Length: 485
Image (tube, rainbow, N blue to C red; front, top):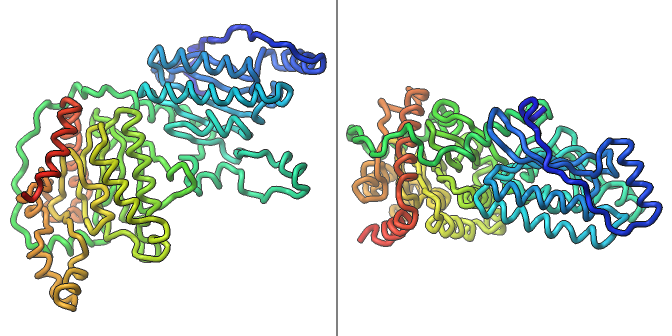
């Protein structure tokens, strides 16, 4: 269902069996006869839409897809071969976990599988996982949970401890609805729930980004001359940026990007609708995109520390996959609440800044709309910073600045003008490098505006990808050290 027809080629060799009991030998013989397979895993290569990939998959009908020494060795050899040949690796686990008949030795095999996958990822190669029904135990706690992108089969039982084992150990049933793919998605632990018939298309889109030519051969090697923008009062820009119908990051992706693969959550049990993480391409230029989603930020649920932890996941992906990182700023401000304080908001802002300013991958920032406070600052320091004409950046909303200085909010327009928050002021200060015009307002021309922004992003990404990495990073550090001097 996933690989191009007739493209699969097995890498498997007959497994080497260690001494075993008669009962276990009989189980293995029965499993071989019943399934026609010699182990619970199969590995090899094939193509997806013509792209060569390595694959490894479990077969549940062979001793519940359990992993013993021979199965683990087969997996490790496949991962090592994929790494040596520079191939993306696709995994389709379905397993009850470690093979109980082989005991502690089988249990320890998860370490060497994990080590092989870690080396594959350290080589900058993609690792994509499709969790099938059921995936539990040591398989889920090792190679099932290490994907750059992880999706699951609808309704799949996915969890650490199988419910039957839990019931036997504790004499009560496991709470229903917890170890289900849909719940893991809601909790930010996996990126999507995808039926088997759709998985090939999802994988193909992801690989179009992850394996894209980093030189972007059809893109210009130099930046075009920026268009002039008319003079607009700061308060006018702020009012325009707050329009409910102003296009945000989702419309930008819809109109200007291709091969978009939305990701979900931190992968560690947190999900915040105020931030969108995605793989995408602008023209031929691939990237990991982090976008503050104006639609996901509400008065009841402002952007919290979980959103910044999601952002840091995106930064790690960019580093591991050697992909450019695009950050999109569009926020009225991060949450101001007891929950945000206790959730470590200030620390997450600091860690985002630390990760972003030192990221070895190319970084491109888009100030798309409102840029209020530390939540905006956390995604700001890029190699290049692009602003929409009515985008703005301020330590507080102008009303807040007015309250501090004038003890009222009536002076907000005056404060906006004096603080230099509008895009043209940011350009003059060296905070922004380029402004994308609005004609006269992005909300009045959403599709045209988004395509204009997409063209600029494509051009900027292509130039950044052509630059020397260490020199680019050194220039970024020097830029922010000298800013304002």
